[in-house]
Image (cartoon, rainbow, N blue to C red; front, side, top):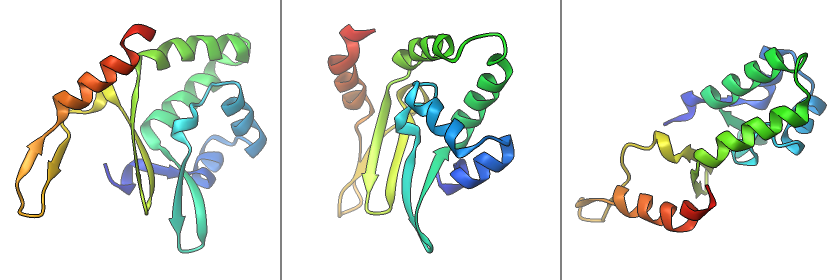
Length: 135
């Protein structure tokens, strides 16, 4: 996934006509996972980005349900979903990126000679060992 799959905080707030305060209130309540707030260096400094598909779907659900359901109830629903969606988080000098484990097709390492080793099963095994009993 490249930057085309990210949306900036500014774009997100404008698209959904939500306030900065609402976004961070939803974060505090657990409606939007902390892992989705990705800090990246830009030409103008550090900015916050989000995985576009995940955050847009979530905000649309929040906006469509917030009149009928309390935010705390929504947070409980979403936390149940998040337990099913563990994340692999990669941090580089260019920023941080989170991937839902259920979306990962393969993970590979390439050495200096160009030899590629698939480590998908090792990553999934580690995830199961760490999170397996917490579902």
